[in-house]
Image (tube, rainbow, N blue to C red; front, top):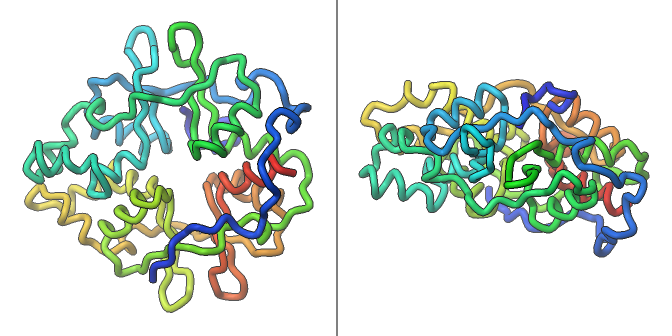
Length: 313
């Protein structure tokens, strides 16, 4: 895992359509032959991890301070990979899904008590990894088929030696010029939320449908976008604790989504070339761009969409 700037990486409708592009299955054996080689050439070697005994709040603070979406869990001495915790796991704990049982059942709804449990309580133990000798197309295959945004790289004995992300792969593949436009690859059937919707409703939608982000729309106009990382930062920055009086996370989850929206909204257009859109995402350190036509939201293009598109070119 690494900091965002390291090596320049820094109304309800179901999101179910893959966009206009339908070019058939990817031939992983034939594609990206010129990119074959060790995955470590594009991966981050400066991996930040925490121990299984680290509290959930401690892990959240590390993710917030470093700008991570995911955090490997390792043995302190050997750095052997034991699991991984993601931003999705954190919002699940906050009321989005099954991990909320830790709060609701074991701690009687007291969120402040639950987040002092060790991170092993919510981490994923069965982690998909790659060996140091893996090729870029091995990473592409996992990203596309398993929809995993970050893959730890391990060496002998399961020791973590690096991590490769969708962003890393997108950056590499986008070096080859594509003739595709954003409208060819964007997702066009979107699930959105409104500025006044409760945060809890947004997190449940994100967990249920495995979304990392939701556009926020008001009167058919794009108001902003919230991501699972935004929610993690809200927790890690301590702002959540200013809103909690009783210790119950429901106090925070009932707040409106607009509470989480800040900063500049970056967008693209349907006719933009996907190389240009990928460059914008890399330069701005964001994982997706809402697609605007006039003043109307017509789609969303993500790092995953980009990796899929470039790999099929």
